Length: 61
Image: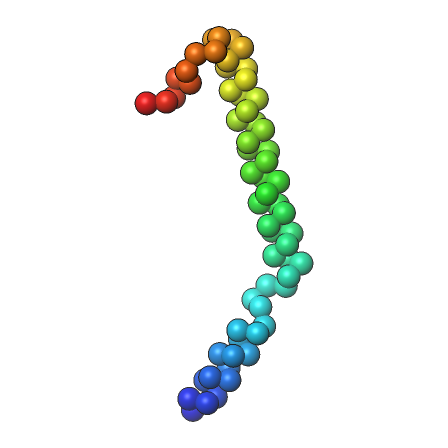
């Protein structure tokens, strides 16, 4: 019984839950979303600085 459980666990370890290409696509999508968020935040801050001058950021405590 322990041998069967050990073999099952070993096989489960060898076979991934998701295919590699799916993991790669998900990782790429996450990276692209982060890039979009960084660019949007940068544009927002640049517009704010142009409007208010180069003072400190108002949301900072």
